[in-house]
Length: 311
Ligand code: ADP
Ligand code: MG
Image 1 (cartoon, protein in one colour):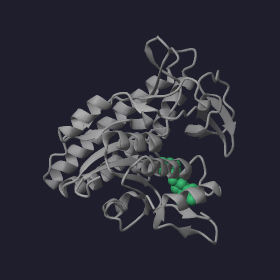
Image 2 (cartoon, rainbow, N blue to C red; image 1 turned 90 degrees about the vertical axis):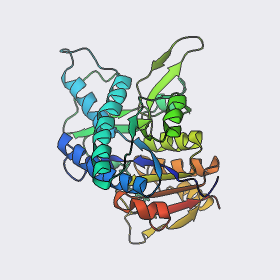
Image 3 (spheres, helix red, strand yellow; image 1 turned 180 degrees about the horizontal axis):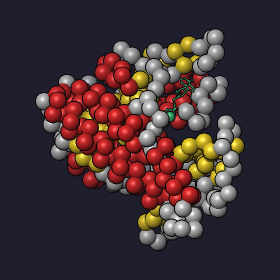
Image 4 (cartoon, helix red, strand yellow; image 1 turned 90 degrees about the horizontal axis):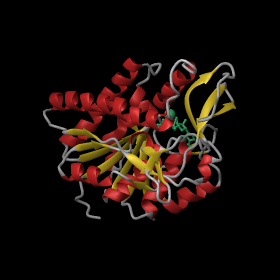
């Protein structure tokens, strides 16, 4: 891929969406605003940015409301909840892009695509829910948990299936908007998980796809050479949280895979990010990085965060 390709796919995690507050709507709007200032700085510098965002807290809130309303309102399907978060988070991103664009004198031309991601109906993820969504609950809730599983840890938590993303079903529309120069937001919340029976119609299923994996897939599908995952730590560490903690700067995929095999990256946090950047590079991507939101420009320049290279 050409080195003059000034396109980057940026995946945004919870911290980039929520700010540092309690995760209420105002905090989300403030967090998104702060993040889009950084994104527009890249656009002003000549980059085209495609955004994928997470939705764990937001889809969890919708499920929580649904559970609270059991018997009083019709049950709300999880795929509808994922679609709803694409719209609500997407609209705050559009406002924040427009505001930051006005301040910085550029037109970011934001566009949000309601986007579906193909998953296998028999993905093992459906038998083994792994994705925690929404708040910790003090007590085990008394609810018909057909669409989620309850697990106990720091408190009770709802956990949903997280099948592998196979393809971005709305790629033609996403591609057309990217070609037109828009700052496209797509596969939000990992994309709406969608299956198709042998002959049957397309339909959504009860799951939440991992956004880091859906972002890696979309970057590959669009032929974007650079994939950046922004989170709330400076990069990837080995022996994280111990006295031997060591932050990785430049690292090859092979070395990262070795640390992964050593069990360095927990499934609920750094695990999917590492898997996503490895897959991206192994499938022909040029460069991937994991770093902190406030370091975005430096991460993209290769001067901060964990930089993952083919060899
Ligand atoms: P996001 O919401 O941005 O997707 P997560 O909370 O899922 O982020 O993952 C980021 C978190 O992963 C960090 O806050 C950090 O505490 C944790 N983490 C776990 N293991 C590691 C590791 N080996 N290196 C760096 N961070 C790690
Ligand atoms: Mg998080």
